[in-house]
Image 1 (tube, rainbow, N blue to C red):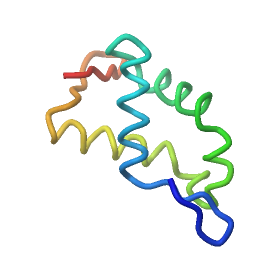
Image 2 (image 1 turned 90 degrees about the vertical axis):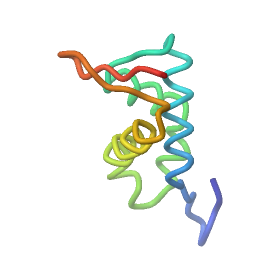
Image 3 (image 1 turned 120 degrees about the horizontal axis):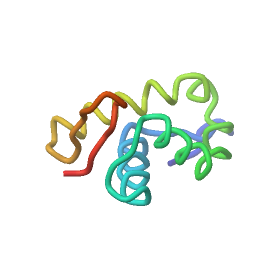
Amino acid sequence: MARAWGVCVITKSDLKNWVLTALRDLGGSARVVEIAKHIWENHEKDLRAAGDIFYTWQYGMRWAAQELQHEGKLSKGGKNRTWFLR
């Protein structure tokens, strides 16, 4: 993360790392809501300081998961929208 104009800049790479960290910390698999809670609990200050990203970070989290899936680092499945580390 970087700062520009007094705003914390959260990159797509940051979001991907946060998703991977959340999954590792949650035992390798978790529902989307659990991952979002983990990210919020660990990065609330950064998210609040990130300007407009504060309002779109959960969309960004889902985008990050899609990219991680394309990279072969994550899979999705189940009725509960569970994400899994690969």
